[in-house]
Length: 356
Image (cartoon, rainbow, N blue to C red; front, side, top):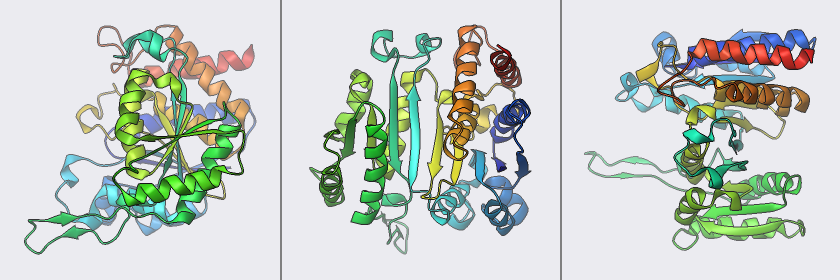
C-alpha cells in the first residue's frame, strides 16, 4: 500500500498532518504495510517548480495506489497566467488520471447538527451521496477564453453519451446498494447538454428496473436540498452543478469542514480530499477543522483498499469525539479545541475502539 500525500497550500499542511496521524495509527493497529511519500502540488509547486503539477509529482503518482490531497490556491496566484494557477493543476490532475467520478457524502452527525442553520428535524440522520461527473462539462469544454481586448469571454459546456453513461452506471449501481432512489439533476428546460444528459440517464436506467429514477432542475434541487433534504438519497449530476450543490449541502452538516470526497477512475485509483478550499485567512493558526480530511482517509481505505471495516472504525471515532462535545472553531465560537487537539482526540478514540 503506497499513499502519496500532497499537502498543497493554505491549511493543507495542517490538515494532512492530522490525517497522517490517523494513517500511521491504523497501519500499526491493523498491521498494514503502508508506504507514505510526499509531493509538491498547487501554489507551493508553482513557487518551487514554476508549475502547479510538476513532473516530479506526476512520477510519484504513477508509483502510488492513492493520493491524499490537502487544498490548493491562494490570493497570490489570482493574477498569474492560467498555466500557473493552482486550480489549473487540479483540473490537470483529474483529467490525466481519468478521475471521472467524484463521491461526496453528506452525512449529519447528531452530535453537531445544532450548529447547522437548518432546523434539526429536517437534517437529523441525513445520509445523501452526491455523485459528480468530474472530468468533462464546462470546466474542460473547448473553445474557451477571451477576445483580443478582454471585453468578452466564453466557455463551452460539453458532454457526450459515453461520459454520461459512465457516470450514470456508477450512480445506478450505488443506488442499488442503498435505498434504490436516484435523482438526476440537470437544466434540461434550457440547455441542450442537459437534454442529452437526461435522455442518456433514462436509457442507462432501463436495465435497473428496481431503481426509482427522478429528475430535477438544478435551481429547484438547490432549494429542495435546503427545504427538504431527506427526500434525496443518491444525486447524480454534471461537473458544475455538482460542485455548487455539494458546497451548498455543507450548510446541512453545520460546517464544510466535515465533508470529505473521493475522486476515482475505472481502476479504483483515487484522489481523496476535503471539499473545502485552502482557507488562507486561517492558515497556520491551528484552528482549521481536520475532520473532512480524516474522513477522506476513511474513504481512501473504503474505496481504494476495500477496507470498509477501517472506514467504519474511523467514522465511529469521529462521531465519538463530537459526542464528547469536542469542536473546532468552525462549529463553536464559544468553546473550541485546536486542529492538532482534534486530531489527537480522534486518535485516542480510534485506539479505544480498537481495544474494546
